[in-house]
Length: 374
Image (cartoon, rainbow, N blue to C red; front, side, top):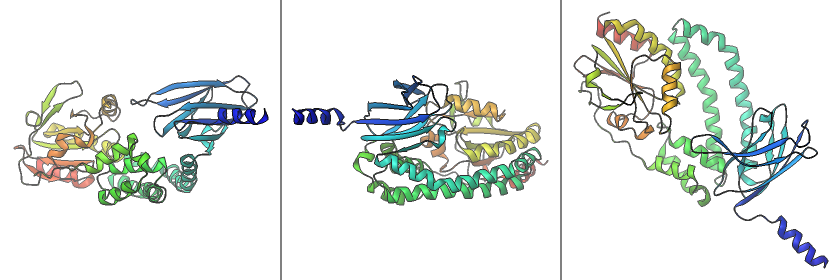
């Protein structure tokens, strides 16, 4: 009888290969507080999968997953969510009501590695935050004064902390090829045109087969195998004509929007350096549009990101011509101009000939003034 009972208890506690269990604690919340298990859909919206209530500071979930992915725990009336990786096993969560972002998640391989990554990046994040707080007033003043030299110097210094975090991510990929975080990093890096794809491909080959078959794994491979055609778009050549929908959905072309001088500006709403540069472009346009300057913004935003593109145009006050195919790095205009990183700029004369490219700040302003005789 005892043996049969023990076998029954064991079978009840076993998890199938596509199941996980969360066992968590949180202090300071009342009994019966509702707790929701969520995931993000393809549009980035949070969708409820299950719910439970708090009992004596404890809660638990048991759920299924098709492949490893992030899931989230939301406590009613508590701001923030606890992210964790859905994978086979029992996941332990210690949450904090007043600082949900400090919650601890561990118990399975990828969640343990995720926690280790967060701790490793804490020092770099603290330095970055301290730098931003110390230089916020300087940054705002430089933007108002259109002081591109100061803006560029601050961007260069800030980039050091971004590079530190990228280096931590790269080490994670190399050292932990079975960690779900590794395939997320790899997918992100594969979309960065300045990264060495040969090296990234080696890291991809070293990933576990389970990770290769996830959505980010398949996305990373697609990016790594994609080759941008090297078509002529050099100084002295006629700029290839192109067309694409504007924010209202009307198809417009380069040729029908040429000015006395035209800047083709490749950018995207998700591109931080582009957004940082936009105030300078706005100032440049306002100073020279009356003399014949035209700007054509070509966005490399992704499919389903049309609203983000339009919102960025409105927020950054970009009042010039805009168009986008919403095809990210596969945009045919970007391929036509051999654009592999953004922001990227091409400057055309009134005949549509490329006279300069990839100028920024004072150099760009001086070139536009020269071409317009201003």
